[in-house]
Length: 230
Image 1 (cartoon, one colour):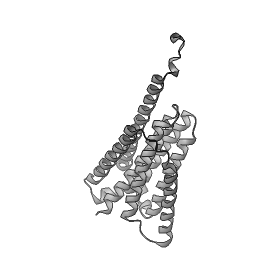
Image 2 (tube, rainbow, N blue to C red):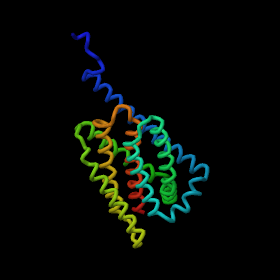
Image 3 (tube, rainbow, N blue to C red):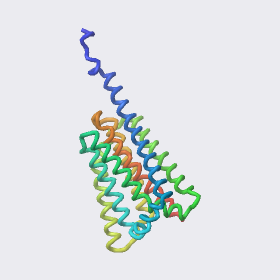
Image 4 (cartoon, rainbow, N blue to C red):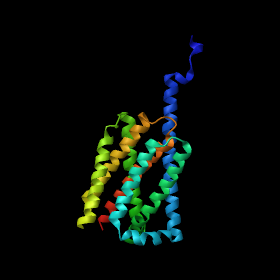
């Protein structure tokens, strides 16, 4: 009887397959972060960043709205795309789009602090925060899928707040950045939980894109918070 068992149906195989899926997800996220950094280096060294940052810095609220919409779009695509080719193509486009949207924020940060320590500090806080949240999800094994509704509504409220600021001319201050950092943290928990519990084993690229979007959102608002101190 034992000889007729299908090893692919055993609990041990299922655990091993899930573990491989999880490591693939985080490997893709790391590659995406490195690609993002490489694109930013190219944009700044080639002068492209300065060219695109000037008009964007005059429309900060529009940039904020675009950043949120691009992130929400990436998360939506992550749950819809089926083929590996389309997932990789969407991931590549998303990383490039994020690098372009980040250009004016990084430009202002460098103007405020030419040493680059502000950007390094914001990146360090983001990395530590995300590691802590990912570790929490992985250690507790809690299913955070209930956060989906909260994230959707909070994202819509953020867009409404930005639209209101555009119409009525008020500033999105420190409290907005803190609230969005909290939202990004919840998104990291949600994405990690989905990676652990829900994503099909063949959708590691899409899962990685969703998590990368959440990490990028946290970095954006942590950097924005650092910049607001000066």
